[in-house]
Image 1 (cartoon, helix red, strand yellow):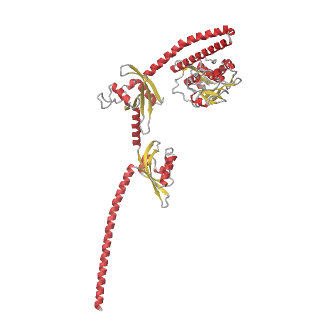
Image 2 (cartoon, rainbow, N blue to C red; image 1 turned 90 degrees about the vertical axis):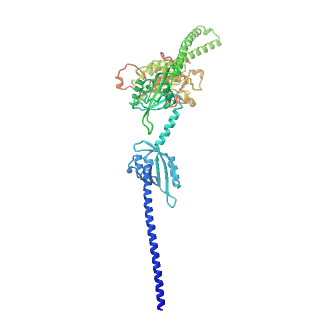
Image 3 (tube, rainbow, N blue to C red; image 1 turned 135 degrees about the horizontal axis):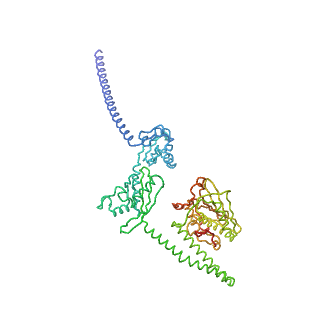
Length: 569
């Protein structure tokens, strides 16, 4: 028994020792694993910090809740956007940059995130100072176990420079296709930034070859390249644009062509400030030698028309008039009809020639536009009295509606009377017998509005957009009764443009039309200024109708410049 107990005790001791050794070994293994895990954790932590530092250095990061409100941003986000952290947290991107994100884009991003899909794309932003910049964004959703959107992580890279470079390259490629010369240069020292193909070829012809060619190198500044053929004018015009006195400048320069002939170029200057780029001047040079030659040929043709057609027509008209007075009663009905047709056609040819000459004088700047203070009410009353007989021929009566007292404006009385004559002729010839045509003056907000209102046929809707074009007449009505050349309202338009105004109208087919124009009323200070007449400034850009057009023959009733009067159809 004693021996058995000794054996059991010895066996138990061995097992215990073995167990203790196993536990010690397991503990040692766990310690080793833990040490290795800590080392791996520290290594991963260092890598994560490096990754985060790299992202923070390069990317804008923001975290937003399910409603799109920003809950966290990194420092790069604040540095790139210019916002303070307190101004960003709790707000949406739409709050920070209103108008840059469209509702369609918002719906697109929201749908992708709520479906658990990342969204990638380019977005336009506004910095705190209002300047624009572009980012390439990746937005990753975070969903809960039920698949509901909890928040989103957005990583954005500023690609403004890439966009700018791409836009600049595309612009330059387009400009190289033009036949006109295009020069870009700095406002401060006229340093050349860009020359398109025609400009480079011109520089080569002048001894300044494109960079890398045998002819030389590009000039550093426009002054070194000859100042676009007129350095003094270039400096004068660029200074005006820098002071904000005009949005653009256009002038002409003389230059020598490649074949040694004298050429004329039109220079158009503009100061632009592209988004993300420094301001620069853009100069476009267009050779207008052929255009001027065509204008001279046109003027010569008009002079020929004036001398070769107008003078004989005057004689023909006088002869027909004498014939009508002396033999009309002796002629047969057929003869009287033919004589009447000849008289009417002679009148129409005279009107057409006079209209063409008027337009040519306006285009060439030869028509007298001397202005002085005048009373619009008196002018309208005079027009109604002077042309009452013309209205009576159509059974139409002119009435005036004017405020009490004078309405003084600056204008050319003969030219404004010519405008009234054209508009009144239109209204009378398109009105039914017994109708009244209203001539009125209204004053509102420092401007006087002159209107001519009829209750005639009106202007067809399809004709209204083109009614101010030359040789355009509204269809419909009795053409034999109305006549016209199709130039009357073109003359009205040109005259009013020289007065700094424009012809506008409202018209309803079958109910009538109203044509009107506005002129600034002279104030007490204006009235006390030097009343000496002066020339009106050039009209500037082409006419832009505000209400859709006008009626260029709802009759073309131009008159001779020295004696504005209504025409007989």
